[in-house]
Image 1 (cartoon, rainbow, N blue to C red):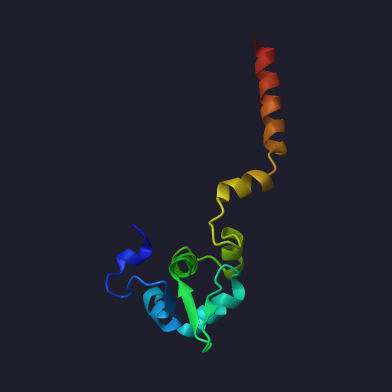
Image 2: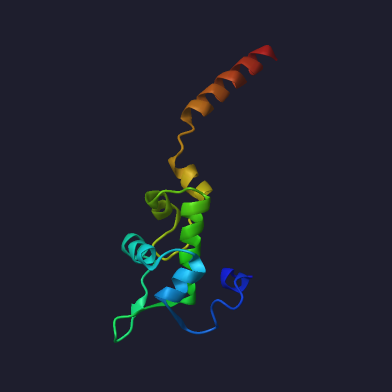
Length: 121
């Protein structure tokens, strides 16, 4: 079940949603959505000929995800940028940790303990 289906009657099934509709569903002001657009490359609604921002269903889902990360998970703006790639996909935090974490000290300690165990045999 996607997030939009959890809010029956708020958004109808259409291709694009106006910024006011998105703000109501996400639960933030339109100015917050415009700020998020400036911060997150994956939130780029198209603009109508009249200059109105039009969000796709995917962008509404992404805005809900951003709100969850910021408000519920307490991520900073920079934290969300590190957690979500430019296409709007969540980056697996374990994948990032495996690359960043240095296990050399743990391995050295383990090696020392194994040498001690071997000498006892």
